[in-house]
Image (cartoon, rainbow, N blue to C red; front, side):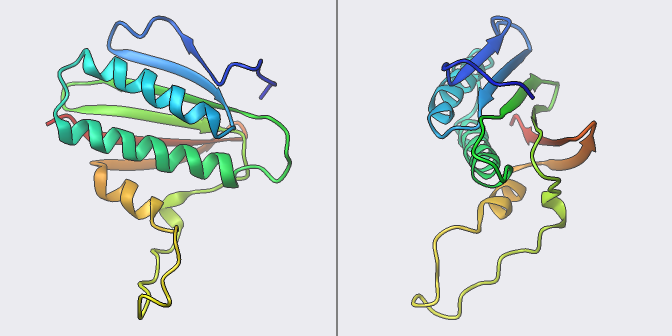
Length: 153
């Protein structure tokens, strides 16, 4: 992927229809703008509070995993996000050129034996799976392609 200008997230098209496409840099500051754009687009489609919660959680967990873990270098990389409305679901597709990572093969987190053994983090993939109707992964042309379907109702 190529380098991106200083803007954290760039939209392709106006997002007025049944889909929204965004390209963002793998930087933490791109997350808030991306979330705002997706939620603004989603509001046009009469979402339930549960749908908004699920979409926000999946965006946060998935994008932060890519930003923190996908690249060994410190260079700026791009993440492509496509969000589409279909009859029953909101479909979110995340693409990045990071190291191959199939989250469906990741072992579930081990519950700590006590509060003293608990450490923050490590539950993102589990939360995404719980909030989604379906999650699929493919490696296509050197890119991780994660598709998450979230029930609209």
